[in-house]
Image (cartoon, rainbow, N blue to C red; front, side, top):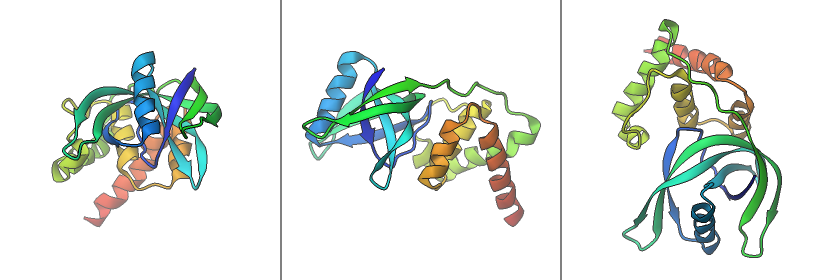
Amino acid sequence: MQLPLFPMQMYLLPGGISKLRIFEPRYIRLVKLAMACNNGFGLCMKNNETLCHFGTRVIITDFEALPDGLLGITIKGVEKFIINDHWEEEDGLILGEVTMLENWSKSDIKFVDRDIANSLKTLFKEYPEHGEYYQEPDFNDMTWVCQRWLEILPLETNQKQWFMSRVDNRAAMSFLHTVIEEELKKR
């Protein structure tokens, strides 16, 4: 599959929702291409000036004219991908040939995982900007909870890429158990 790519430091996984301000002509064209082909576009990270291998295909769920006259879009992560090849067009827009990866399967919250889900609920209450886009958060799905935590935590780009390369949520769960348990011990 070929997708227009939007490189930025934002880390968004399937099910994640965010807003972007669009002002550069190349990204206005990206929005037009994403809407015309109905495939969305690829959100991918950069490590220094190098495009990272893994990204997330996102779809545009809403548009708005911002007070400053710029275009605002709401995006939702659909599925992960790996970039096989990419090239830059004359206007600076990057296009990529990508292979879609299977999303992590939904998994029920087990008793031992409740602290991870409850800590995310608490974070969303204390910092509503992290939870404002989720009208129906799925705190009963461990995959959804893990992905929202990975989006929020201040991890290095290579760490985020490593988690994206995993075929399921087990590594993320193990990592989050360690982080959350250490934080709870401090309290």
